[in-house]
Image (tube, rainbow, N blue to C red; front, side, top):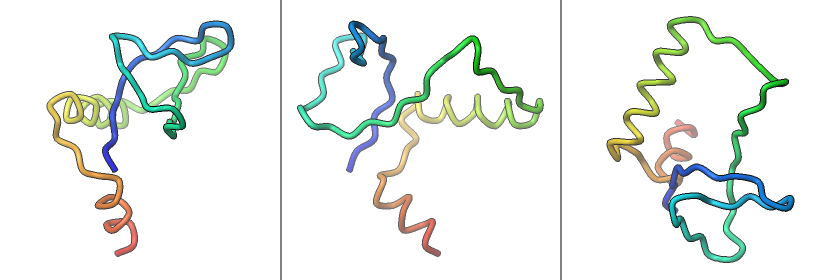
Length: 74
């Protein structure tokens, strides 16, 4: 299983990927939505960790979902 990270917008109630991202019909997706009303705060250390994780994903430093599940079972 390959995991992809991309941006999308809601149009007519549907999530529409941006940047010509094409997903097969029936694809399972996880959505993290930006919302002005539903805010949360991170500590400086947590924010740094999150930004580094995003940078790793941007560089392609990822693992498959099956590898993640195997690691979590240990």
